Image (cartoon, rainbow, N blue to C red):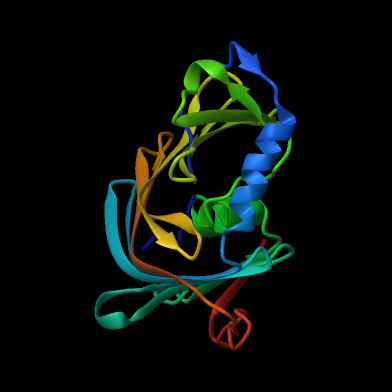
Length: 248
């Protein structure tokens, strides 16, 4: 079994020519989206993983306490625990119950990849899960990729990749997210579909992440996304003493 996975948000691949910079407008849109997203969210459904020619289907429960922390639980047939992932801004732990291994360390993209075969930094993870942009600043508008119904945003992330975010104005949610390298290679393509109202905003209940480099995919199908007033306890968990622990 492959080590866990995680997921992602939305945007389309268009050329970066003909761009208009309207920072105040962009910030207003994203701040509005963040302001109406419930702080505490509970996701329940299934995830289908297709990696390296192998397929796996698991039930999943995910808990997100604003941007403070997140817990993901994966269950195999008959509800047998398969894996758990906990992450906060400074640490993460990924426990694979079936392989009796646990990884822990700083929640960087590099460490998440080592623990889960592919992954994202904690900030990326929260943004993708909650259907919000990673940041509210530094985005530009691609006019050629935008119309009266949708806005295509993009930003350069250092020299590592370009982020694209496609935002549906009417339904008020991010519909597609994409990463491309500086040489125009597609790194990640995530589609968000089946929007349903959760509190005051639409939350996608179908998320499909395509990873061209490995020809892999991760598909979430959430039966329910609920707004929670308050979680009874923290998300962190302990690892059994007989488990192999690997620090990253």
